[in-house]
Image 1 (cartoon, one colour):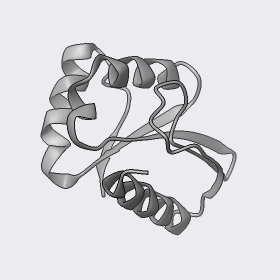
Image 2 (tube, rainbow, N blue to C red):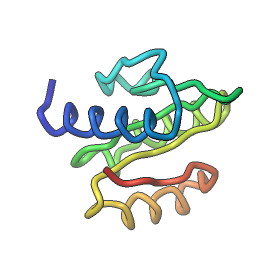
Image 3 (cartoon, rainbow, N blue to C red):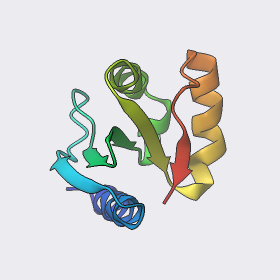
Amino acid sequence: MNPKRRTGLDACRRLLEREGFEIVDAVGDSSGTEPDLVAEGVGRRIFVIVLVGDEVDSDTTRDRIRRALGQSETRVYAPRILRWRVLSNLERWGLAGAPVLTY
């Protein structure tokens, strides 16, 4: 696994656990078909998509987020330096329903 991806996944896992969520599924392979993490807690289920590098601008990312938004509460995590680019893309793609958090 890409070291940047592993770092992002580990950071997201810690952030969610601090919020009281339990990680129930961790795919983490950016296959484009599943969220990277699925977290549950307090009656909520969250699909998590972790972005690294060029994934921020890809059509595959747009499709992953769109699918996740249709199934569950969705969070997108990106490195702090890419946050505004992700927000801009979500707005352009019409997917403003996913909050963008940084790791």
